[in-house]
Image 1: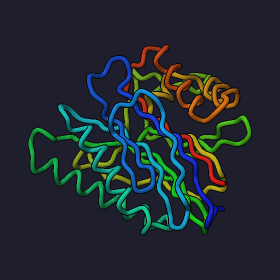
Image 2: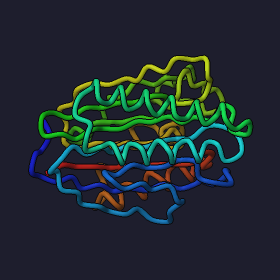
Image 3: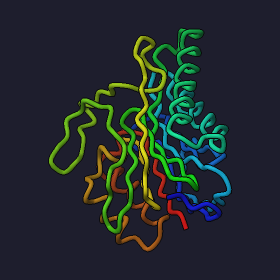
Length: 249
């Protein structure tokens, strides 16, 4: 259950990686949006007096379209967060954002196909919810284990260690993106009090067990998030990287 009257401690980090010229990932942390490529994680403590959305978004599309799509989604979630409390609310909010992105793409030829993935948690005193569209992921942290709670909308190959091949990734749905494809968000109840959220720039490159080890052995959440990023960079840093590590108390 959510921690009404408590607080959530969030460690946030996003970086363009080693290859991409710009960062098309963005983060929603309560009422705040982070989209600038960072050099070190930041820690925030948010009071839980009202529903709070935490989310990572991974933009897709040519030119600056992906960056615009992910930033728009993150900003809209930040604006709506306090008013969202049920799975139906989440589904409606994401459907509205999908419509907004598709409308923008229809209006400007250079933004044709713009879209974004999203994965997040809604922390609420009456019960937490997870949600996602695309292949960004949310994990519940249970002791030293990461339990994936989101559903990958992807046809990518999955190896025995849980990694996906970035070269073969094919996202089956996103917010925005293909104008003729219906978007159906995944949502569900969650009983956790600690989560890791990330774009595929992390989960494609760092094995599941390595992510678990780095979190379990770190001296702080800031160290854990930074170590996760370093591990992805050591594997080539082929994509933008977005990470949120959050704990309620």
